[in-house]
Structures are given as C-alpha cells and as structure tokens.
Image (cartoon, rainbow, N blue to C red):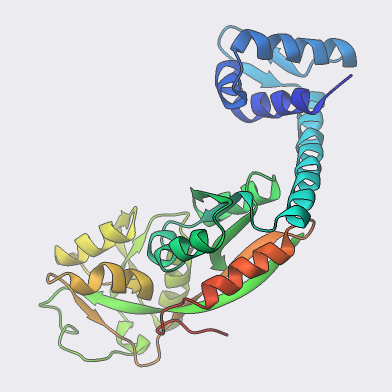
Length: 301
C-alpha cells in the first residue's frame, strides 16, 4: 500500500526534479528513494516520473498525484499539530516565515522573551519574499507567515498587527536634508531608489510614487535595505526606509539624513495562517505577544 513515507518521497522528487536532492531532503540514500518510488509506480500501475540520465520530468498523472500527496501530508501534519496543541500548547516545532525587510528588525523585540516563556517551542525561521512565503504556507511547509498586507487571503486567516511608518532617507547635501519634516508632496518630480522585484516594500513605494508624481530611479534596484542605505550614502539619490530598520540601522549612519514625514506613509503588517490549522489559538497568542512588545513608533490598528 502507499504510505505517508511514499508520499513524502513523491513530493520531494516533484519539488526538486532530482532524485539525489530529494533523497537528501528525505534523509535517505538515493537508491532507497529510487526503489520506493519504483514500488509506488508498480503498485499504482502508473509512471509518475520520466527519467533520463540528465533529467527528471513529472508525467501529467504524476503532477496530479504529487499535488494530492501534498494535501494528504498537510492534513496528516494538522492531525499531529492538533494532538500537540491539546497536550502542550506552543511546544514542538513552529515554522515561521518572514520577509527580509521586517524579520531582522522586529523579531529581536520578541523572540528571546517568547522562547523564555515557551522553552519547549522549537522556532524555525524562513526568510523569503512574500509571494514565496504565501506559497509555502499554502503547501504546508510553513505554519504561519509575518508579511506585508494585503495578501490573497483565500483559505487563510489574517491577524493585523501594526502599521509601520516610512522615513525619507537623503544624502547630507540634498535639498531636503535640512528639513525637520517633509510631506509626501515633496517627493513630486523626484527619483526614488527602490528594492528589486519581489519585495512588497517596492510595490508599496511604487504606489506612492504614482500617487504623488515621483519616479523610480532608473538603472538601480537594491537587493536589501542595507544596499538602499549605502546607495543613498553614496549620493545616488533618495529612498524610503521602514521605521524598524531606521531605528536599528539607519539612524546611526552619519552619511545619510533620516527625515520623518508630517503624515507618514505606512506599510501594513500582519500574521497569516491556514484556516484549517489546528493551532489557531497558539498563533493568536504569538500575535498578541508581538503586539505587547512593539516599539511605540508603530501604529496598532
């Protein structure tokens, strides 16, 4: 018969299209995994993967079975999570996904105190762009995600946490550098340095640019907030940086000027998890723990 172990092997090969990497993920030898896949194919009377020396390709029926296997594994994990949550809430593994422009600057306010309160919890962090985190959440690879909102909430529960103000970062010799405050209208006609494609913050700043008549600085796209800050320090242009990053990194940089907005643009941050999760009460407790430890500069809805 087909077991959960077989399904894990099928999904691993479907995800990697490589038997060696799939075996590493499943912590078995490649021959063991190959034999197990062959046994499933023989039992079902179907070919799930077309193999050559150089490639592995999912057959159409293999693709459908792999997708159904993901659902079965997700449900099996929910059973384990339900039992664990009833026996010992907030214990065992918790897989949290977080975006790179947020996690390193928010989680230090929270994680050490949370681990102290829940010493049996094993928290695993995954840093990825928002869309990839959302896909991993829906696939059951993550338990909850901490991301910019809005996201596609079909099948998901959302817990709004806070609004994070954005600051203007300018070179010291820029015309706006001596201002104690600026307005978003001051950005009209100006070029702004932005993050590369895939970052939610890029999309939010682009929306602001369209509203006020600003533009993206041509030819430059940063991979991180640190890169944006260095580009401003090099007098390439202006950018917007989120409040938590400003407090942690940018405010101490003598080579840039951080200027608050009189009515700051904000990004909306929240937690998301699958509606089917058995750990909803735990996730809400985690969200409440974050809310209780937020810096005063963040706005709670």
